[in-house]
Image 1 (cartoon, rainbow, N blue to C red):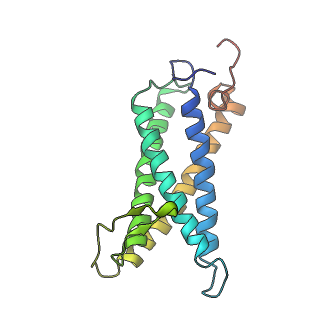
Image 2: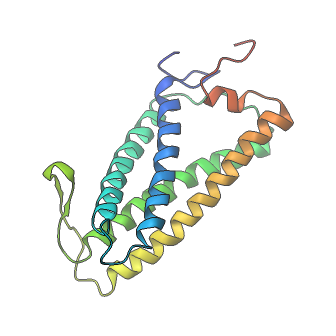
Length: 184
């Protein structure tokens, strides 16, 4: 497996960041929905939100790393008609915008009361915005909406990859799995 992307295929860091972030986003979604069901007396009432916040910070760091890696590497050629190429590029850009907005809204939920965000290991992220009326609720509604939007986008993304594989018969999905297709 090669390290950097080229015109024909994705490099290992791109593949690992893609699938790792997909799994982490799914885990964050499940944890977020589960923690909403916990009542105050549940033994995990504090632990699950702490885990969710810590994994959210990890997601933010991976997102920044992924964007830097993306900017420093070429995109492999797309196996698609021009209209699909435009849609794919728009969808990928929208992914970044929505993921960053989810991270920011999650941060605002956690620091709305003016207290720093305490992470595992004693690391503190400062509260940069406070004193805004109903900030936690407003950011919470945005966070909730964006997580569902991201989920819908992920379903469309997976459907497009499956369409490329099973209908078009091209190597789009195979390349992101890190498998060399015939002729490469």
